[in-house]
Length: 86
Image 1 (tube, rainbow, N blue to C red):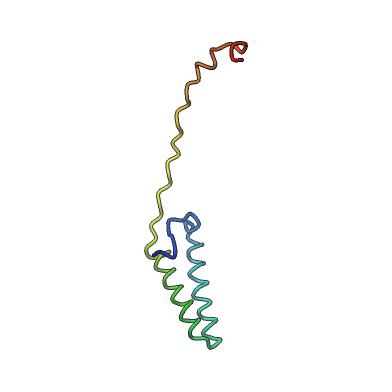
Image 2 (image 1 turned 180 degrees about the horizontal axis):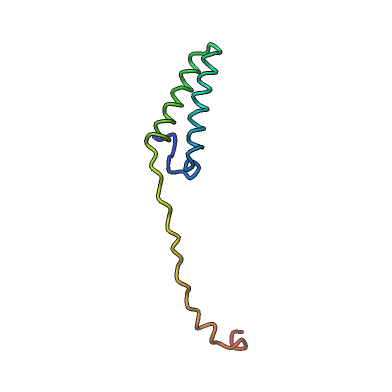
């Protein structure tokens, strides 16, 4: 089970990935200073998991090629006079 999908486009910029990891570890520090070891361990573990998925194992997907379909030939309709289309 994957909690973080690294192929999601929101994780493409490096600053977003670093910010997520920093917030998790920062919150673990806040909980440690507040003498809440359970929540500190929980947010620290989340920060470690986020660092693993978003910084260490991150492999960006190559951009999808924007291949446009060739225009369809509608010569049948264009050659018909307007009066005959009714």
